[in-house]
Image 1 (tube, rainbow, N blue to C red):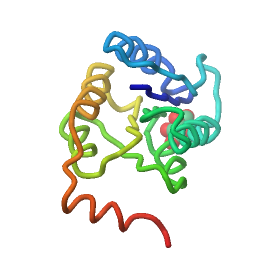
Image 2 (image 1 turned 60 degrees about the vertical axis):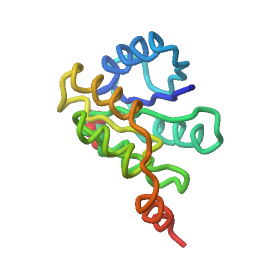
Image 3 (image 1 turned 60 degrees about the horizontal axis):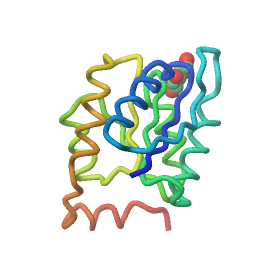
Image 4 (image 1 turned 180 degrees about the vertical axis):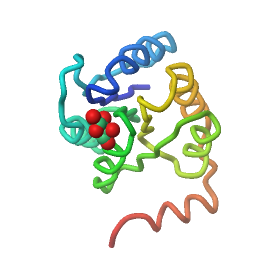
Length: 143
Ligand code: RB5
């Protein structure tokens, strides 16, 4: 499993910790984020991650910004991306189970690291349910 991770300055500290957590699970991580606290623009990193997921260069993605919304809005402009915002394990599971989100977005300024990390694990460990949810996902792309 290879995961891409994108972040702006608001997500940099959680990104660094998440990379370590993922690597201890044997997951290869490709970072598309900034590595410093200097102010940057989240779309620059969101688009890079989205393209890597769409091209199959990584299997899934994680994105972090302050609210999560800038990343989610940008990522979901890409037809091949289903980016889901989650802020706890229940939503982390559901965004995998129901939405088959190929990118998990975290609001770094609104959750503790413990919650962010648990949300990532819940999303990763939960399979997509398919069935009626697949039918709904098939209706998402703009025609
Ligand atoms: C950065 O200050 C902040 O605007 C950004 O991290 C994010 O919350 C945008 O949606």
